[in-house]
Amino acid sequence: MATSLQALSAPAAVRLRAPLPGLALCAAAAATALVAARFFGGVSPLLIAIVLGALLANTTSLPAATGPGLAVASRRLLRIGVALLGLQLLVTDVLALGWGVLGLVVAVVAGGIAGTMALGRLLGLDWTQRLLVACGFSICGAAAVAAVDGVVDARKQHVVTSVALVVVFGTAMIPGLPLAASALGLDTTQAGMWAGAAIHEVAQVVAAGEAVDTGSAGALGASALAVAVTVKLARVAMLAPVVAWIGAVSRRRNREQTEVRRPPLVPLFLLGFLGCVALRATGLLPDPVLDVARLTQTALLTAAMFALGTGVRLDVLRGVGWRPFALAAASTVWVSAIALTGILLLG
Image 1 (cartoon, one colour):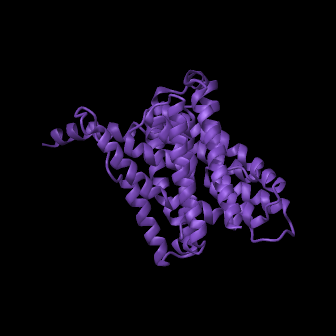
Image 2 (cartoon, rainbow, N blue to C red):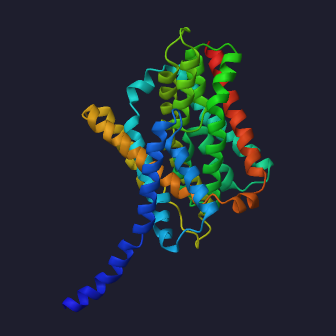
């Protein structure tokens, strides 16, 4: 009997050990990125991690033993990080923005996705690729890409390309949007709203908000950083209903394809995200716990971004062609234009 149990447990032990080398590599890279971010003000550790992953993948040959761990990090750790993102979302802060700003957020997300999907179709991109770009650019960057991948089961190349585009175009907006806001004569409150409504990643929004505040010392208006982050988190709140809707659409698209695995209507990590939002709303979590949760979420997403970065190979990106890059550029301009128009209408 003991021998039989040992025989049964051996494969399980092998499966548990298989991801360890890759996860250890991701942990080391995440620690490096987190430390490096402290020395480069305004640079997100997530961005550093994906660059590290891309550099490593394009300058050396990663051992095959790291493959299982990198796969776990790029999917499971990423989704846990997305779920923990809900602890940053305080519903009362979002509602305090007022119906005008909330309407702007809905217009940015809905209009951004619809416009990007239409542009992608004109460019000849398939439904999954343009959907990943549309949601990543309209909602919350890599986290949205991961969330959508959870219900459409996209090709890895499409996921990696979409995340890379978020990094490239979102990072370009960090210096670009504050300069444009200054040229247009926006006050700090309006500039912060624009950053929160238009820029892709939360970390990129923070960096742009800090840049606006630094360059607008003494200017009228509330802190651009505080406004930008609150507006951005309102966009993050749209993640749940959008992904649930996409899940329903994806199931309908596959209903006649019996050989295709039907994606879940509401993935587990999205329920985790909603649970974290509800937990934060109770007010039961003290600040030290929220700080630990924020650090954990950042560490998980940083490790996941490194894993995704190892899939950003120059030869693969060259093979992708110019169309995804054209769509990313057009989507950035489109989302920014919707956001700016709304802000000017709000006065």
